Image 1 (tube, rainbow over the protein chains, first blue to last red):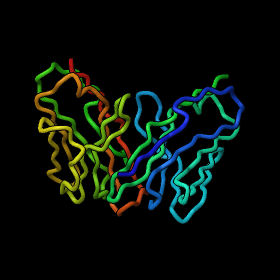
Image 2: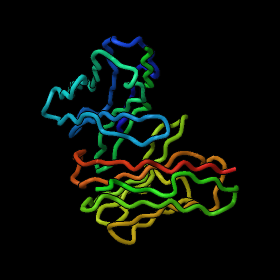
Image 3: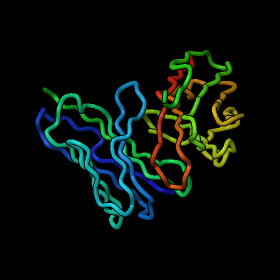
Image 4: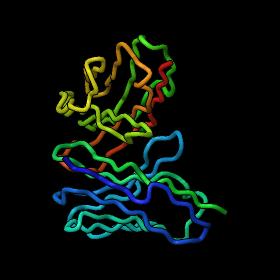
Length: 111
Length: 116
């Protein structure tokens, strides 16, 4: 069974800092990996999807990398802003159609 | 497109009562998923359907939980009888259904269930 782990569980940084969130998975035979954002009391919003053939994806200030061989992905957030405060979840599909999620990293960016 | 629509947004019920959660997937998506989110366990898959057929229900906690998808545009998750430990946020998601393909994977806003 695919296990997904996210480190750290919580992170607090001052506005303007660059930061890295980590995700590891136990089964490297994945099709792709996705990063989501969840605001308090809300659903999940897709941020970045990395296909297994790719090494990274970028969207604005966000950059996600994927290293299948080592079972790791990172989400890099440049020049963090208070509006980036949320929980960030990574997910990989299992052998079927469903997603296995990490427990997330709760990010707080202080002004 | 209105996205994945869940109802109700919030539900408070007494222990022992029946609870029914509803989901309308995105039109054209042929896979539908029910997840449960708690602080302790994070997001867990309960069941998923492909082309209205239940494919994997191994995440359903016990017989008190049941899910149906009578047609491509509607699904229900029922808990009978409900217990306080069922309190959680229940999410519905839909996707295009290709194996391992996360494109188009869209979540609803969730139903926050509180059983007192």
